[in-house]
Image 1: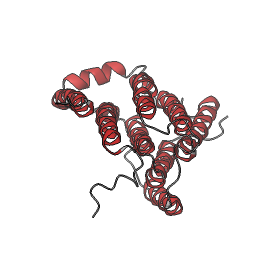
Image 2: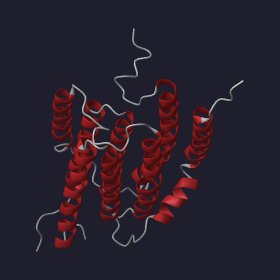
Image 3: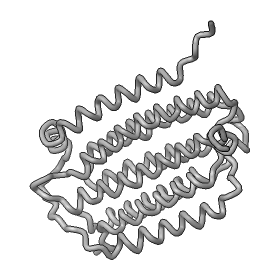
Image 4: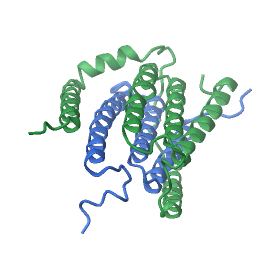
Length: 170
Length: 108
């Protein structure tokens, strides 16, 4: 499946669109436009998960990353000043260094990751969906992390409410 | 007929690219919300690598561990965004700015 022409074309189109949207996210000078580019990036990453046979993560990415998290970010943009102007997201004075460091990190990652001999598994071709497998794994092998993460979410929720609450004037 | 086999390295390359983009955004922007968005990009870069490993390194003894791990990453990222935005709003209320070079409360 992963060597058909359609698969290859889909991958390259998705890769180019995702990376372009990612670059736009960090270079656009209007923060609202940058947030829209971020949503686009997340949206196309979801389809990349589908190419990797990860149907549960595809839906989770669409719901959480392309749906819920951008809402939070857009709210944060609206609640802070200078949000709608073209200078709401300027570069700092060190953007040249930033580009240099980012290029260096990319070079190191490519040099280290690409030639590495990763363990190769045999993906069962008869496997149609992964949701059932992950669901069983979550409540068996990963039951403890699953519960810990639910507590973490609750703590994060309460923490966010407590932090953002307006203090009573007395 | 194929225009090229798409393997693990292709997905790792996309992941590395997104991660580098995130680092650039993290280092070059002044608006704290933009820094948050860059961190989210880096989370997603890691997730692509995890899911690619789950797909190409599939093992029957521990099926799809990478995908399960990616789900945990998504959950923790959601909690992180909520807390980070609450902190940002608090800083904005106290200091009147979200530009990181003007938030020098702890600099001496």
